[in-house]
Image (cartoon, rainbow, N blue to C red; front, side, top):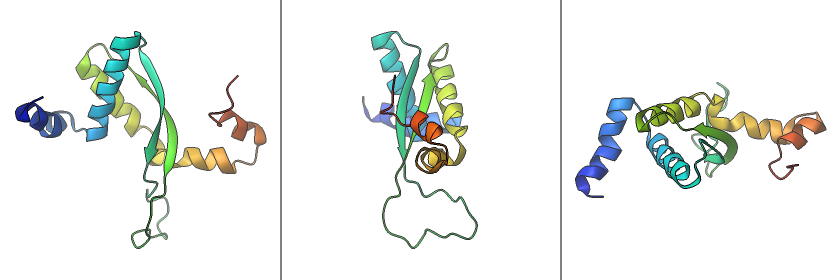
Length: 124
């Protein structure tokens, strides 16, 4: 990859498709996985910083540290690379509060069956 390719990846793609760098990188990962495995979907856990503004009264701007949130996502291959990028972007944008709620459900839901179902180590 040369400087022009890097600039196109970091600037031009975002301007054309209103994406973020994670959208493009996950699209590339999904495309490579599809080419290698033949599978049209990739399920993985994503990590976020966990500092989404969930409540008006809570200001995290003066706190130190990383409030990691981990949440599952299922990415689907599109008919071509453009459709794959759009599908990845739309999938990520559809996740409420950047996935923070998944951790809340996984650890704090009052129903033990729900918590067990959300545990990635609990696979049949």
